[in-house]
Image (cartoon, rainbow over all chains, first blue to last red; front, side, top):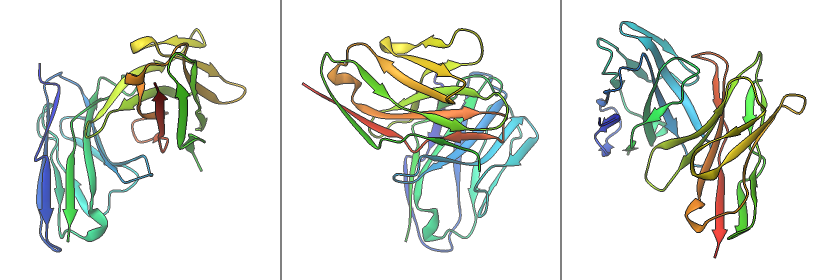
Length: 112
Length: 112
């Protein structure tokens, strides 16, 4: 039981490039989330999904896109990377909104 | 605006002494309340949650939290701090899949 896995762990992008952050969970959780964590700012919700085929915006969705074709996978797409997207990105999953969230190890992204 | 506040960026406590990490929330409805801990270069790990019922919630590693509805607080406590408790602690309130808020975190340092 691996829990929530994220790839890559680190990435450096040039301005204007695009990339996909991968997230997979093996706990059969219906809810999945993407957050960004900036220093001293806590976590901000980017997108979330309540089940396969259903996604919705969180607090800071601009510049990102997601898809949820399976229960297990919830990739986050960055189009036209900007320096403001430099952050640590965490994927999480839970069983329902009252369930505790299980977090992946994070992806540290730098855009220069 | 809805939010979760952790008024102390840093809490220092001597090993063996009781510790308290404060959290207050301003979230509509009756939110679910959570505490998570983050160790360096790791994702967040669940400590405990309040859904309903007894106001005193017990969690992992000897931590507990007291829910106070009138003060909209959910302070994290431990009777006797360990050096290994040193980490970053986050309080979160969930009132819906797209209505969830994390505090900015409190860095706990336990001094030997």
